[in-house]
Image (cartoon, rainbow, N blue to C red):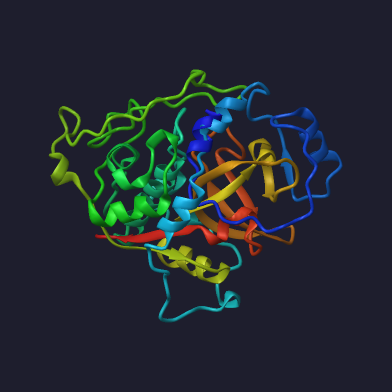
Length: 340
């Protein structure tokens, strides 16, 4: 699962030079103890993965730095005609409260033992946005399966991909519907089973080997009432969003976005609070659904949904420091507008 997470990386930004952080090794108890008892930080660590799960953690991440940075320039940067000052935006914003008629906002998906986070972050945000823009009339779960298997420009499937290309594919080719593994939902449900990434969970353990990327098939599951072509839903445009206030305005106006960021070893141990890099070295990159923001005990944060199921972190979610481009997350935002 670790390798899949690493494969999931996309568009890793240049990390600003900082003083070296202490490094206790990946998934170590010493790291948890340091974060909770010695470091003066804003978050709490705990055991999410078995200490021997190094390869699994790296499998679920993925890094294509140079190519992804080049591809990112293909998308324009979103510019609001009427920019709002940060002081005029709500101090705390949770889309689950703002748009209660969109249940997808409360879902935490599971990428399984595959580095498909780049596809999941995209389709999760698309699913929320089409519901929000249609005022709850369109409940369409975009399929990670379609993006991961059929988008040739997007990267390497379970071995990593590029968020910007997933959004370009959305606009160019459209994406069919599809729920989680074994859900029988939509045209193409996800083929890779959800798995227990964690020490204690309710699912089967993740595989020990590399999960192959499913082959692209341009047909729907037997019994589905539409053809593959008929089921396609498209994006009107896709773009990058730059700057803290612009990201906040984007979230309040259109809903969740996709974000990519650099993953350090301490992130895998996140349990609660506002994460900021405290210990450890770089593991790779990860893509997620950034959905809201707020202030906790005086610390500004982004609210983010992960794709490692609800047993990870804070019931599948995490908060990360806002306003400082923590781990490059504010410089790697991608979004788009679905056709409603």
